[in-house]
Amino acid sequence: GGGGDGSATEAVVAVCASADGQLVASASGPRVHLWRWRAPPGAPPSASRVCQLGPHRGEVHAVAMSEDGGLLASAGYGMRVRVWDTASARCVRLLEGHTLSVHGVAMSEDGARVASCGFDRTVRVWDVVSSDAVAAAAAAEPPASE
Image (cartoon, rainbow, N blue to C red; front, side, top):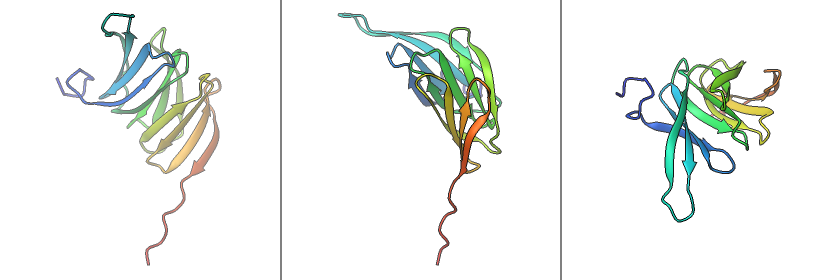
């Protein structure tokens, strides 16, 4: 049902794909679903769910994938970015440093870096191997109203 378990009745709030379009990740509730898409010539496209990643500590807001589809970053209300190995469906890195929910993620083509932004008004760039934030910037203060 729609009770926060990541089932198909929950809204899909984020999606990303590998460069070849064959592996697609979708975020629903506290989980990420991996799908294998096939579009053989002369046949209708088909999709099959490969696995489910999670659950996270809260709803997932954002997903990003390396070019080859081997790594996936996901983030949301839990204040952390998780990096998943898509072949094993295991969380291989936990990137911690945001103080409020993470709103967006992006991943470099090779999967070596992840950028994240959050409700804590920061943008962070992470080294996936070391799990360290290699850069962080605070959003500019809004202009004072006159």
